[in-house]
Amino acid sequence: MDKDRIKGKIEEIKGDVKQRIGGATKDRSTQAEGLIEEKKGQLRGGLGKVKDEVRSEQERQGERRGPDDP
Image (cartoon, rainbow, N blue to C red; front, side, top):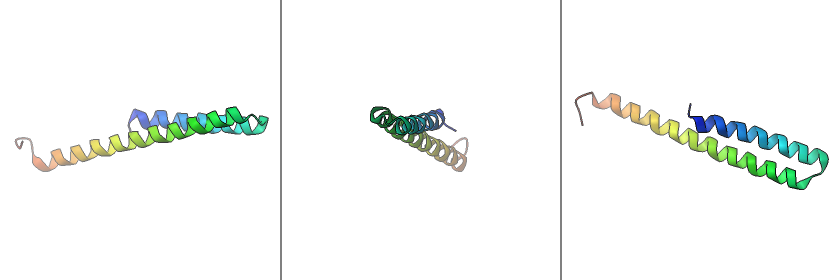
C-alpha cells in the first residue's frame, strides 16, 4: 500500500472531525477547513491508489516478459 493512501486516509479523518466540530460549535470557518482537508485527503488517497495500480501493472509486465527480454 502506497504511503499516499495512508496519509490521505488520515487527512480525510482529520477533515471529517474538523467538520463535525465546526458543525457542533456552529463555526463555519472550521467546518470549511475540515471539508477542504477531507477533499485533499481523498485526492491524496486516489493518487496513492493510482501509484499502486501502476506498480502492480509494471510487476505483471515484468512477469510476462521474462528476465532476458528487453
